[in-house]
Image (tube, rainbow, N blue to C red):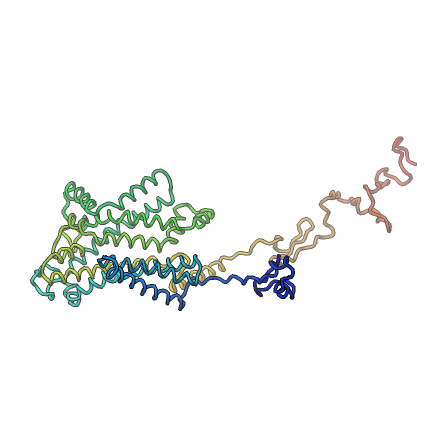
Length: 502
């Protein structure tokens, strides 16, 4: 086998005259080994704009439009605007795939076609959203420039009055009060239920999750009828903004629970495991680790629920009624919201009332946008991302921690116990703060730990042991005992059998 150098693009082991022999036809066995080395694989560019790509897109679009014109005008008896655009788009995709296949392989063709499909879907959704917002703002342009439209109610204005009289102040205040009541009920209950479903799995949690998923498809009129039957008919309460807030919270609660549950599942399990490994209880782990990590996603969950509840009309009509006057008391008297006001305005045949209806719809969209911005500011960025204000706050907290640790710092454990110079058992200790490399050498009078302690006034046998001669090893066994200390006199040795001295 031939080793190919990918950087140089030429075989390393091939002889220099291999191309000449291959050209002459000599050495049939060496022909496969001396073939031209394959060029190194280059990574395919999957992003960016190229000239050939742009030309392919515009050429395929023009060709698809021409095919649709031929089919609907000349060749086939087709008709209808929707069919025309669908045929043109499908022809565009097919022609674009063919043009891309002339330069790229199959994988690149699929990638380019799916990219075009996704960009087309995104552009279609953006165009639809722009059309809805633009059409609403354009139809309400007659009412929005007037200041009384935001500061007055419709108590003293009628359908035939000009736009300089009357406004939607009562509907704006009613919407804010109702959504505030609904958020005060939904946010704690929804987040608590999501934490329960995420942190305490079991049979009951599966049952609760099933009920929440079923409530997601609950019609809004059913929620309004439930609150109307319980709060107004059975308890005898009157129609008010509080009852409407209860009905809206019923619609918002399953949305917030489901979205928050999905967000909490994305929190890495290693974070909770690390917190519990440090000894933190479950509630502290949830409060200080799980919820701060998922704060941005939880804000999005609250926004989704708010967008669902703020646009409800039928529950408000059943539980709060309708009024043309400003009412700031949510517990007494009927109250109206912006969606209900829009419904009542646009069903009138008068152009001024229709303009007020579209102006109220534009204000409703702006209110939702403001609530979304507030929620994003409160939620902050995702985990691991900080803005400048959060980074400065974290830096100040770090400096405070460093100062506090420096004040409370105590010396760490050292290899040797340090203290004032003392003699304990013949061992002298170094002074305090001497460091790891300073240690007290034992005194010469300190006995060995293996040797028995000598009595007072008696020498140790090791002190009388004669030194070994040169070339000899250490003496084995105990030294000879002192005969004078054994016999009590000077002279010869003592016979161990008879006890006589020699």
